[in-house]
Structures are given as structure tokens and as C-alpha cells.
Length: 391
Image (cartoon, rainbow, N blue to C red; front, side, top):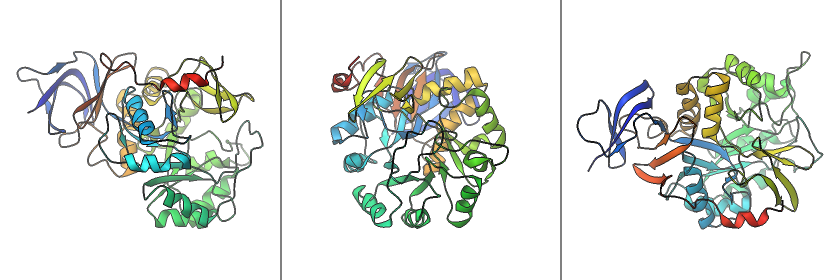
């Protein structure tokens, strides 16, 4: 039996449609004019393709960077669905790898889990506000151990490409079909160009953040990334991590199709502002949506991709269609799943979100199943997380 959704603003690959989406057996079978009764009439509320967040450490009190069980992953999947996410690549520490792997590519009451994203551990901690933390050097055996820990479900690993033996690790990752992200690097422009020539990089972790910026005598990692032709770019557009003008520069340098909007959120995102204990350190969730340590260094975002879409449209001046593409179709293409999801197109999975003009999520569907309904789902956050709040 079909389910029919009505809206005057359905955001498709071919523009905004006034009509209906007909869903049968989890797939979109028709997008077109309304013909008869409908099951849901959303009037002027927009229907967008479900968001695919490829860099998310946690949300709503659910953490992927702490030891996790399948229950934690399921809670996380439900929580991110409340902000329009229908697919997510949990960005995890190894203590959560096995639980994430066990929940990958199976139907949950929430977003699809697409596998494991390991942000590190082979970093160089460059960029602004470095506080002298040390990280292990690249090691093939350690990388293989992490791949094995993820039970064949590792999709992406981030690494500083200028480090000794980084190329050996990058080759190992590519041999295993794992995407390589360039991240948290002290590299100069020549280091990035050499890595692209020698081993290849697939995507840049949170472009502009955690890297050398542009200088007129050396354009740094940031400048070189933007000059390369065969890269994709994660981008946080909450306007806390990257200012409006820098986003505009990035979008002038490379086409919209190269950018994937990410949240980089952690478990505090969505919780009340205040001070929380994390890894025996005090963390601050401020009113602007930043999560900071006591040194003032940014340690993730308290916002989410749907909010970031609103910032792109309302402040930066990007069209809704382009902003949605960066949040849905582009990451689907990066993951190689765009034939089945990532846009509202006949034949694809009915992965979608209904949003209002304030970029609040009203309903989320995964394969035509309602996995979040704002009128029904009131308790998607983890109550245990509030025990970490100290002020």
C-alpha cells in the first residue's frame, strides 16, 4: 500500500516541486501533481532529502567516542533522526567500533549507520589554538589493528599526511577500500600537493579548521586543498567554525558538488548550555553552539547539519537547493550510495525529512518508515548525559 505526502515545497534534484511524493515498499515511486487524497498534507512545510552526516561524534547525550554498546548506537541513531539525519557515519574512538559495526546497514528506529569513521589517531595538531597535545606517529600495524577492530566496517580514517610513514598507512587504507581524510595537520602547501601526487587523499576533514591557513608567502594546507582538483571537502557552516566570508571564498574556489556539510557534533550537542565533565576535563557548551575546553579551543560543535543548512541559506546566501545538495547528495556520492539515497528522486529510498521555516525537523522517514515524529517522540536524548553536567 502506498503512502502519499503532500507539500508545496518538495526539494528535488530538479528544483522545488508543488505536489506529492508517493512511497511504496520503502521507495519513492512518484513525485508529481496531487491526484486525490493524501496521507500527510504538510502544506508549506518543506520536504528535503534526508541529511547524511559523515562526521558526527555524538548527539543528544549519546557518545561515539566513549565505550559504547548497541543500545548506545541505537539511541544515537534515534537522536540524530530528530534533526533530519537519515544516514550517519559515526566518528568514533575504538571503544565504540564493534558496537557501530554490529549496527551498520541494518534497519534501526533512526538513521542508517553506514560504518565507522576514525578521526585519527595519527595527527599533528596544527592550526589555531594548539595546546601541545601529542599523538602517535603513523604505524601500519596499528592501522591494521584498528581496521580489524572495526570488523570490516571502517569507511574512513583521518590522518595528517606529512607525518613519517603516513604514506604507508594511506596505501593500506586505500588497499582496503577505506577513504582517506586529511586532518589536524601542520602541513604546508607543498606537503599537501606531494601527498596528492604520491598517494592521493579523498577528502579534507572540516575544511579551514585544524590546519595552516592561507598566507601570501605560503598558502598553507588550506590554500593548497582549494587548489587541488581531486578532493572533496567537509565543511562546518554553523558560522562559529568558519566565517561567512571564508565560506564564500571556498565556494568560489571549488564547485558546490565538492562540499559535504558536517556537524562535527559531540554528545553535548542538543543538551542545555553549561559545563560538562568529559574525559576528566571540564567542557563548556556555550550559547553560540560552540563546545570549548578551558583553554578556549574548539572541541566540536553543539549544532547540527540542519541548523547549518539554515545558516548557509539565511546568512551566507546559498540557495536552499545547493545547501541541501551539500548535506545529502554530495555525501551520498562520496560514500558511493547515491544510486539509492541522497536525493528525492523516483526509484530511490524514501529517506527524507520534513522541516519548517526555522529549520526545525517535524518528521523524518527512512525507507518510508517514520523514525522521528516531533509530536510523538519526546525522549530521544540520553538521560544519563545530564549526570555529567556540573554547572
